Image 1 (cartoon, helix red, strand yellow):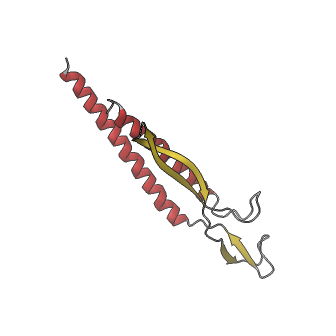
Image 2 (cartoon, one colour):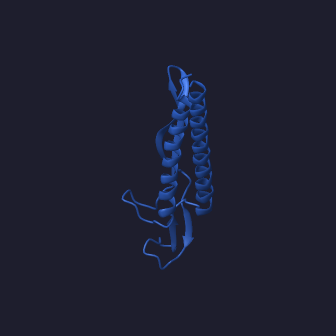
Image 3 (tube, one colour):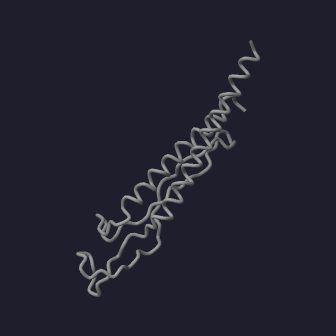
Length: 133
């Protein structure tokens, strides 16, 4: 194991969790978007992660990309809305702001945990350097 591999692994996790927080923020920002360029309401996005490997060994986290949540849109009765159908229902995004906030807290905690790992690894390296003097 290389000296800085722990820091590199956690750094990749920091990048992934930051990306996840950006995706969640986008979901929250579009929680009421009823029109998109593709047509229809905004669809919730999810970040997809995978284990990164280096020479067959786990070497952190990689972001594979973003996928759309295929949950159907919520139908809300609002006949005065410009996007209401003939029956007065509006297709709203499949974004649940409460769930997004829970996911955001989870991502923030994972980010904080990886910062702690990096700080502890730095302390270990500094202690090892002091021993070598």
